Image 1 (spheres, rainbow, N blue to C red):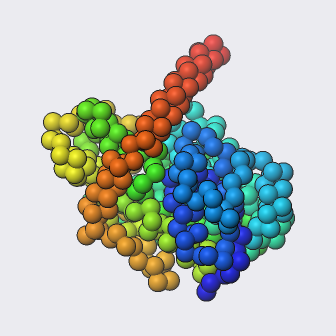
Image 2: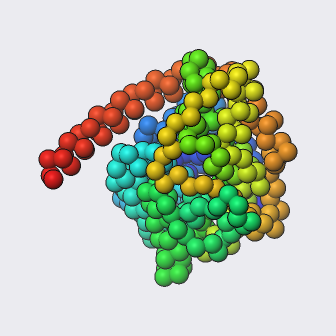
Amino acid sequence: MTLKNMNLLVCGGAGFIGSNFIRYFLQKHPDCSVVNYDKLTYAGNLENLDDVEGNPRYTFVQGDICDLEKLNEVVKGKGITHVINFAAETHVDRSIHGGCKDFVLTNTLGVQMILDAVRFNKLVKFVQVSTDEVYGALGLDEDREFREDTPIAPNMPYAAAKAGGDLMCRAYFVTHKVPVIVTHCSNNYGPYQFPEKVIPFFIFKLLRGEKVPVYGDGLNIRDWIHVLDHAVALDLLLHNGIDGEVYNIGSDNERNNLEITKLILKIMGKGEEMIEYVTDRPGHDRRYAIDASKIRSLGWAPAYPREKFEQGLRETVEWYLNNKEWVEHVEQKKKNEMNKFQENLERSEKKMRAAV
């Protein structure tokens, strides 16, 4: 089914996955329009969308998903029919070491505000983009994957906050019949990713001639998907997904962290002496694995399956190497943000010590 003249509100569209989705959606659907609604926190970057800025079917509005009044104003003023939400605090280490208030506000309360806007304005559909981390962890030797009916059991503050948003979606569907779909996707890779995530983080460090840190023994496993495959899956669900359902999205591409690290080193012509093993982080889930058979039954299949992962990773590395100006701007932004984060962390710790 194709919905012509869709006016789509993309919350968090200036980030990594959101910007890739917007670019794909505008190319795929010439009769549809996009309003990019983004707070522009540290990971939001309008440079990600320089190539669509002049498109008459694209509009940017700066705003916070926790601001229901602003959301309603945009929905009514722009004639919004559908919503997809990428807006989230996503950095796991930050949620562990820096406090998780912002994570709860954005990932749980913010989702509730969107649900209220969808409900009050009687919109056609809302797709909430979540994570496989809400399921908790699998053992390395377990012969199973996360299914849509796997119980939610998050182990880290970030995942718990995302699970809160997912459960709010379920509650609004059951109680208010809000037309919402929740997706749980595996780890994404591709162009325009902020360098707090492992693949661009390693690429950036190697470009500076620095070693790359591997947590623990490096055997933690994640299921990897190319961001464009994720975008195609989300577009399919906007059009054909069933309200009230949960859909897992993954490429059946399990890789341990050490394997990812060695592939990046190989692509960049570096040796394994550039690996530095560091103390594992608290609550580090051992393995994630996605059963995506439900969305595959709708006709979706990844363009970068497991056997094409090295090709996709090589294209990703080449993108960063060929976009040095973007890299330099983002590196400076990251440096500024880390300084601010450290200052806030020290301030919070001082307050906590004073309260004891």
